[in-house]
Image 1 (tube, helix red, strand yellow):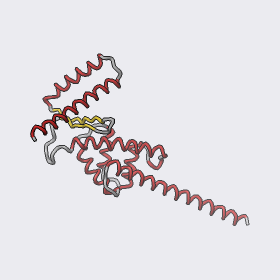
Image 2 (spheres, helix red, strand yellow; image 1 turned 135 degrees about the vertical axis):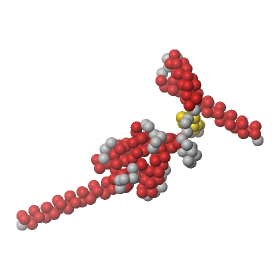
Image 3 (cartoon, rainbow, N blue to C red; image 1 turned 60 degrees about the horizontal axis):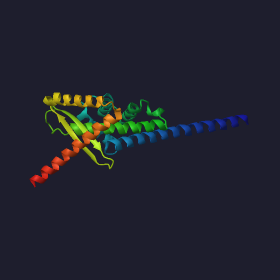
Image 4 (cartoon, rainbow, N blue to C red; image 1 turned 90 degrees about the vertical axis):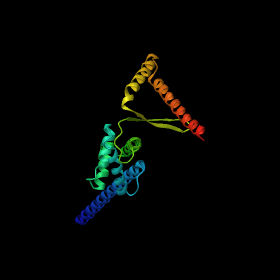
Length: 220
């Protein structure tokens, strides 16, 4: 009788263990699915993941030689990697962003992944916008490009890609130093100095937009 009871208890234990392991595996599959879905959405990629990964790799390859910032460069490099199978690549990308293998993730780690992914995807798209203005097959531009954007409280955004030619670098640096010295002499808080520069950028962007509209009116 005791042997039968022990056998039944053992069967119950192993049955519960198998159920727990299956639940863990199912939970991990759901996590990978969520990781992939967030990646597709953040990067504006097609589904399924295989198709999205292929497009991401193509887009990243166009930026690889232009990116120098360490975090974005690592992200671009991982997007370009076509050597791993899709599952292993997805786990590798997730681990890069959170610095922890997804098998060890908690809910907080998934949240951190979403935040880091959103930031990197936005940074990726900003660089992509600058790089892709080159005509297909054109030689790389010798100018330095900066993207300036100011968002109004209404949600309206004014932005412009600014090209600095090699012969203009010294003039730009001289004006920038003068502005920097003026702001420093005012002994204002960093936030106020930054706000002043942002307001100046907003006015310049607004003036440029007005000039374009005015020029169009004169020609019509």
